[in-house]
Image 1 (tube, helix red, strand yellow):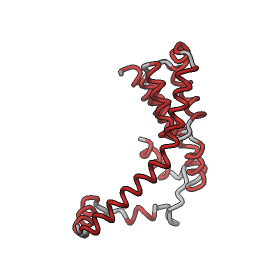
Image 2 (cartoon, rainbow, N blue to C red):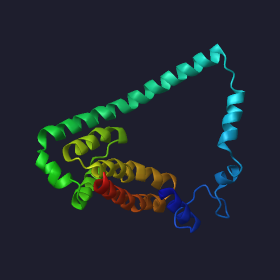
Image 3 (cartoon, one colour):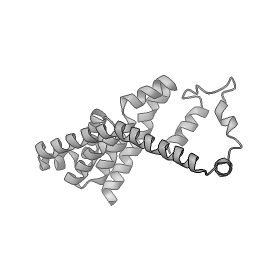
Image 4 (tube, rainbow, N blue to C red):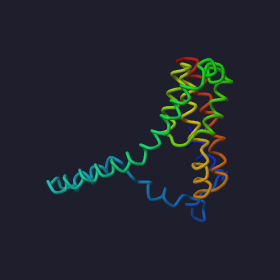
Length: 190
């Protein structure tokens, strides 16, 4: 839904399009008009030579990439686990229920915490699980994870510097109401 809203805003000129030509058309989109994922996969598959040398080289690349990713993300997960364990140890369960429970107030407070605490999506996962474990509010856990990303100042800052200020400002304006609505519905029905 967010992507569709951004497309409408871009067509109406309400958000920047730094890849547009003088007519306001996306330069990259013209190259993709006749693009087919199926044909691209066929072309790549038929062009790949399944030799021992290629498979070993590609296997090493997968292992090296996996290790680099684990090294990058592992620390954030560890930080999230430490924060979640502190929350479980030092925050009484009744405070979790009172302020982060499956209510509208709980969703709003969860949104505020997500905006402040968001360090990394992976690092936020243990904290979101702790919210769910303490309150049983799936919608609040969902809100914590999704709103953390949507309101993260580094994400908004990257959009601001790479696309433009209006596109960055619209990110939380468009996504947060959707996140709160889905969180409310999850709390209601799950």
